Length: 205
Image: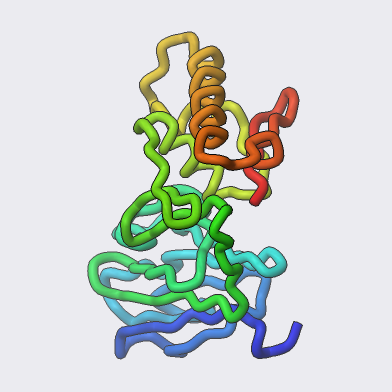
């Protein structure tokens, strides 16, 4: 891959070194001390705070068990999060980064995408009206697009620990409703949300 096509992590704090880091490695660590690839000498940052994992053209960030949390666009993450161009990353209360994708995918007017600022799923310029259950499900699939999300992970994303014993039936209803809403918005649902028999669901964009 040409150097110009390598994703970058830009830091916005005097204690960050290097202030601009090219994500050339498969796995990079941000933390308070070497041998972390990005060192942040701030007391609220853990020794190993967060990990960045490169998977081809995609980059994922996950918290590494930090004391003060890892946030993407203001929301604390507990699972691997797929980064998009312009995402703001915060470690604890004060250390900020921004992720830069040198070759971001342009959003076609007919495609599904997530508007980070408005916290809405969009088709072109039209926001999708989703109930909380369907929003949580779609958000879970979207953050892991291209990966198979297990039934259990989907259930956890929607209801957390609030299990009632009929989770598979409720999940099936949520998937049915979500597909119906996406179809009504003009999206090709059969190609968008795939059922992987015996495993879970997969969002393909």
